[in-house]
Image (tube, rainbow, N blue to C red):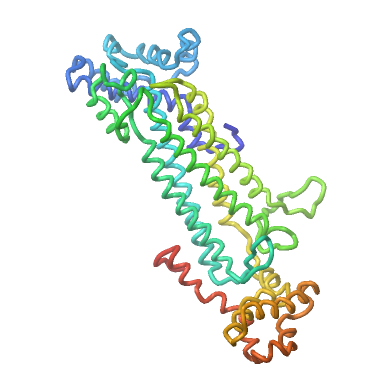
Amino acid sequence: MVPRYSRPEMTAIWSAENRYRIWFAIEVFAAEAMGQVGMIAAEDAATIRKAYDSDVLGEIDVPAIDAIEAVTKHDVIAFLTWAGEKLGPERRWLHQGMTSSDVLDTALAVQLKQAADLLIADLDKLLEALKTRAFEHKLTPTIGRSHGIHAEPTTFGLKLAQAYAEFDRSRARLVAARDDVATCAISGAVGTFANVRPEIEAHVAKELGLTPEPISTQVIPRDRHAMFFATLGVIASSIERLATEIRHLQRTEVLEAEEYFSPGQKGSSAMPHKRNPVLTENLTGLARVVRSAVVPAMENVALWHERDISHSSVERFIGPDATITLDFALARLTGVVDKLLVYPERMEKNLNRMGGLIHSQRVLLALTQAGMSREDSYSLVQRNAMKVWESDGQLSLLQLLKDDPDVTAKLTSEQLEGLFNLDYHLKEVDTIFSRVFGGASD
């Protein structure tokens, strides 16, 4: 965790204090259920629950627990030893029939669920920002590019609507991944429930808002976690896609949009004129960090037999790092979108930059509809288009076509002029917005 890229609420989820409180809750709820089914003395179970409700642990003394672990070389035993000192003789019932993975895996499920809830809230804020800006620029014409080259007109609103749809899919995937990873395993050594009854697991799961794991092999199967981190990786890739688009649009020779540049901000230590896309460049890098968790999470799926701990050290890194980084990145991207400077006049200038080449397909189609073969139509339009291209847009495609007798033999000047109407390309914008946003209006 790098403080520069961390936000307090997400960071708190991965604190030792939060982890230990979840561990204690698991032990308490398990003991409570054991008292209900007669596995331990009911009055002792009630005493343990009462101590939990009164916050018997108080402030978690992490250094004290670390000191115990330095001797025991076992984190769960160290915590139980420290926590047991806060209780009376009833502490002997803690961890009855349970194994460490029951506590560790169930606690991790709680933390991942907590983290997912924050990330879903982050996505909701980003979606709202994208929606607002998309409707603002719904009919702002801009050039669409393929291979980085001018293609045909689109709108800036459609660019943002596409991003909205992508992140909306990500939200649905994250909800599914959260639900899939939020399982509870209190099944004892090798997962057979030999020393702890299934009713105990069901009670703990209910108290923690989890679902009982159908079958655990002492550990919760790591395919669930692999899917969770893969989902985070996809979201990170979507962040990078939008960040890359903004970076391209901010290039000096394009300059159709740019990050907000605040008063007093400096772009370069050497060149006072610079306004660099530093936030979106940063987002590109952060996306790489989040994706770096995906392969290790996949490799964690294959554990030896019913359990080993080769996954444990990995998850101590990727759990906090991926969720904290993604939380920060989503918040940063929301700010970029919300404050993004958009330049419709520059978009119009770029639309007109290449002498009307962006309308070439309409001429091609019109010639075929006038009876010319597609091959001849393509060749005829291309030979005029290349003259415009080679003139760097100084020549006019429309004028060259009007001067070409092979073209005018099929199309009148009035027909040709009608083919260069920008509005033609925007006629289905409402349809697309309806698909993306449903019945939403601006």
